[in-house]
Length: 299
Image (cartoon, rainbow, N blue to C red; front, side, top):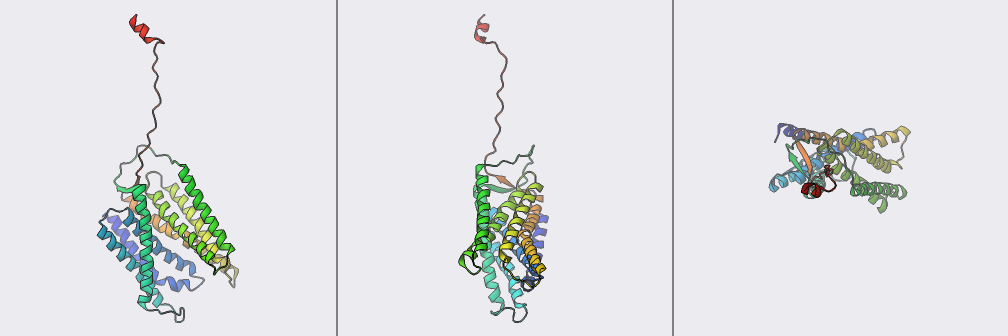
């Protein structure tokens, strides 16, 4: 493993320790965006683990061991955070195992879902390779009917879920379903789009800005759906929570994953499409000749 990737792993291990403060921060309205942003770091790390399992070429036993170890390590900090909450903050049992076991299950399921998405990408669309020879000319961006259909479907799904969440009662099943659809759509957009932007050959900056803008837009949508009906004492409290949660939902996971994959790209890894490259047909070449060359040759 290159030294840069080892340093990246160490940075993620140290960054996970911030999760010990997430619940204490979320309990205060002024620090709620920071607490949500810290919780989003663990989500981005789950995406990175899913990418390593789904696109990596390590042996299966090492992947399973990494999956279990990452799930357990990420669950340690929320479990400690629950124990350090102020007295009376929650009514349930604050023992370590009561917080560790549910968190470990959530992270294990999340990593497994992300790994499945990346496995489908490796099986059907692209593989992660290192030391790919640079292209002689920049490859133009090509869009097909399938791309247009996918973008239209995702946009319609987000808009429909937003409208359903805003027009239903907060405690109803339809509201909960619509919110889950919004959140899962945001996760899928981040999981699929960020590796496409950072690891595909070609220009990175334009694709990264496009993906960041899309993720931030979905983050604003989720935040508005969550806090549209929130009652506050001061009007600026609502704007503070709305803007802060939108950044925490939409920008933080994308930013963490983008920086991590930028290091992976720096080490020479690229997502190479499994589809055969299309070669443009050469134009027909016409050579001047007599109208009846056979007659000329016979004569």
